[in-house]
Length: 120
Image 1 (tube, rainbow, N blue to C red):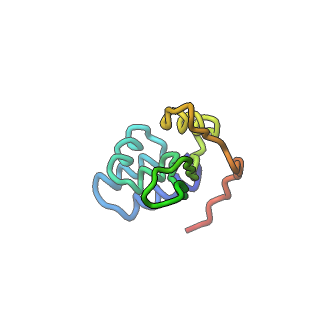
Image 2: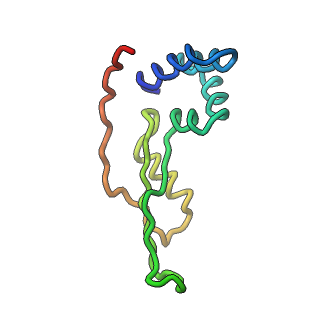
């Protein structure tokens, strides 16, 4: 988890109440148990704590009443700092589980440095 994500959960802990506030504070400190608990509570929190991939563009077929001979999909991934591009590519290939489907990287933007957190 990078500094921005830690700062986000630390601030959210000050806004929320009760056990959720406690769990969010523990997430900011890096508690694996709290991360699992908070990730299970909300899709929003889950996506903030993990690598996420989503199909952003789909292509296929030449007519609405015919099965496509070819198809293509663009999948955009936001890769968290603890994961590598290679691991995400390997996971996508495993999920697709079809040797007839090519899974490739079109654009690898590489790791971007984490900018320092601004004071909030």
